[in-house]
Length: 511
RNA sequence: GCCGCGUUGGUCAAUCGGUUAAGACGCCUCCCUUUCACGGAGGAAUGACGAGUUCGACUCUCGUACGUGGUACCA
Image (cartoon, rainbow, N blue to C red):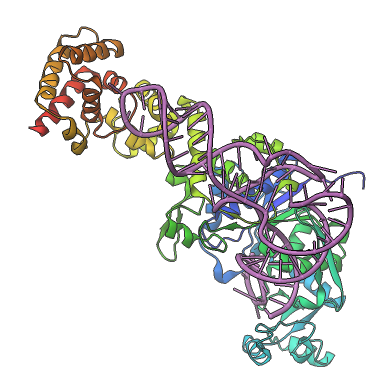
């Protein structure tokens, strides 16, 4: 095969709730891989489980991908040539293939009721085998077209007795395939169960749908989480049984994202417990009425979010850690994805965001900051003023939301003061200093950084007071706390009038 | 239980048989800043264990341990 096919990757989430970090990463890697190879990235909605369908989840997923800047080229939101992209809308296609498999002897009808299945598992359960499967060992004891006479099966079908179609796993075969990350993977066919392909309600299970759709949508590279590895042999067999072996996509099973503490996959609950988001954006669950915080709303930049996710399980091999999307596309390769799972580290995640805020031009930064301040009811005076504020405080903001605390005092006099700290330095001569300072400020003809700093320091020297002490108090007067950029910068920005009022205000409080 | 996958500092990780085993986050110290950050300089901290292959193993093989995933008419 000298001619290589056009790369087509897909992200195939099921619309059952908030979009998890790991899901975004899978989408991201699929996107990066497709773009790197000038291919197409497809979004396919795997809504075959009617009972788990959640209203609004699909649009939410689309919105999340859009926020991350990794929107799909084809999907339910577009008019792609492989539509429809919702499996529920493709329902009729799957049955045909299931029947084809029955026809060719690779699948069979099974009429066992859920109760009967339960009974079988209960009866066959032993300490050595706590979870018996419907497989090559047990299927001949069950109620299916393998154990029933042909006429019996036909009668049941004619009577519309509910049934499922199961794959008939072969005996004594080693199913082998190559994973782009892990290399050759082998499985003993005797050990994997006869997975249901077509459910009682006529919907396909994931196993059938993923194969049929990947084939029909001409997917060339299929990336998914490591949790799919155990059922991969079923999919590999299906590709071959359906006669599509030559077209099977290249697989890559991505390592899991683990809890930062303890063990196991990172879940929404861990985020709640440990105080960080797990979903890309706020997710409102219509069933419970609860909203779960997302990275976006917490103040993450999408650029930082995909950057940190990309580096969670993949590394370029070089020291560089901050990547733009374009740079990621350029540098990404599946071979450099780690095999082992990675524990999520929120501190590092925040570091990425901080780096992105520092790196962002002041003007772009202002675009994000403006709505945040406005939503808090702050009158931003003018864009020029805001721009100056942003340039002064941006390096000390880790999350976008930090801009509020770091810049309110440029717009409003502080409501609360760190009086504890002031009192340690307060004394009669300090009071005298500030009284005199107000008067000198009044006489200043020019209000700029140099003028007021000179005035301030000259007075301290005159009064024989440590500049640092009064400067520190001055900071609390203007800001309310022990933070923020240089005091004289702040003072210059807020103006003479405001500066004088704030001095007076705190002096009043100190009696 | 069985099967799959994995295992370099607390965390993310480089190394693709020969290095004093990078770098980053976090932590600590110092400098800068008479605030807090930013920035700069330093520091502590790593190859799960046991065999084998090899002149030489973090790197290859096997075993053990541990972790993780799966074992549904969920994806």
